[in-house]
Amino acid sequence: MSEAKPSQEKVLETLAGFIREVIGQEWAADVAITMDTSFNHDLELESIEFVALAEKVQQHYQGKIEFAEWLSKMELDQIISLRVGDVVEFIVRCQ
Image 1: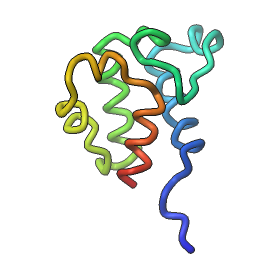
Image 2: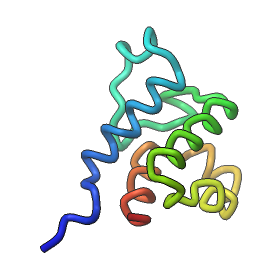
Image 3: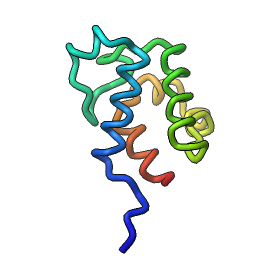
Image 4: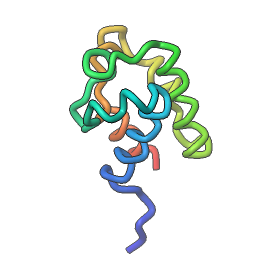
């Protein structure tokens, strides 16, 4: 048995760290980032911050995550309702 795929918990931890870096440390102490956290409603992530987050994900996973391509296949309402868990699940599937 090989453990090639990172666990959802590990990916969530990594992604939460990136989100905190992108948004800023003073904000990070106030909000828990879980699988159900929404980027739009809960985090109020600006589009430029989302781009910065996508870049961090690309760099960390060494280009194995086609984040922009995945988003390009979504309708606007799907992107607006995106949760942290959706991104975590996508990253795990890509590994």
